[in-house]
Amino acid sequence: MPFMYDSTFLILIPAIALALYAQFKVQSTFRRYSEIPSGTGYTGAQVAAELLRRRGITDVKVEPVQGMLGDHYDPRTKVLRLSPDVYGSNSLAAIGVAAHEAGHAVQHREGYTALALRSAIVPVATIGTSAAWILFIIGWITSSPNLVNIGILLFLGYIAFAVITLPVEFNASNRAVALLQGEGLVLPQEAQGVRAVLNAAALTYVAAAAMAISQLLRMLVLRGRMSDD
Image 1 (cartoon, rainbow, N blue to C red):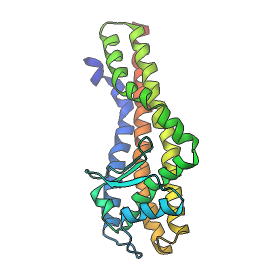
Image 2: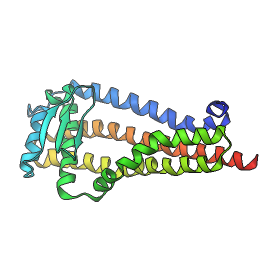
Image 3: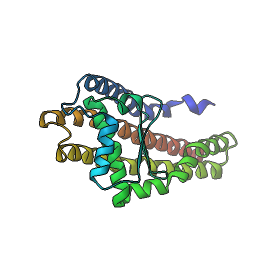
Image 4: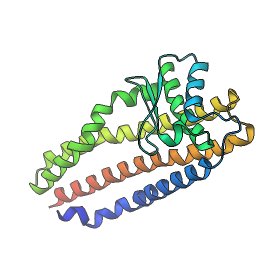
């Protein structure tokens, strides 16, 4: 498939570079603050449970999950899952990540609009990441503008998901730092380390959105070439 490697691939290079940097940044920052224990001694699981309790959220379970940095909050089942490096660790990195996921649970309880919207478009985004490129490629090979256009339209669902994710994640991180400080679960001098971990993690979502938008631009350029032929 020639278009996979043609000159339009250059459109993706800045986003690829950002994604690689984001991956390096989150791993190195997490590793650094994983070696610094919290002064309060709370583990990630304890911090998450305590923040939920203090916010009156009693119907969310905190469970361990396998995989590095596989931490997430599932609003459908109301389960907050923490990876082994977070669940049982009392490092600044661990409690920062745990507080971030607790922030998502608080968003859910308060009806945070962006979170509800992101959850609502998950099915569309799932289709956008799978069927969109299949239809686009078939349309390109068969010189069918209609299939190409449908592929682009479906991919817009994923674009919407990636963009909406940004305020959801940044808000959860801001909530995490505020909750930890407000509830006295980190010492004042530790907040900077927690914020560094969460900022590094947020960069991965920025990179994902940049990659999605770059892919859309490439699709549009390729679509334009079909029109010129």
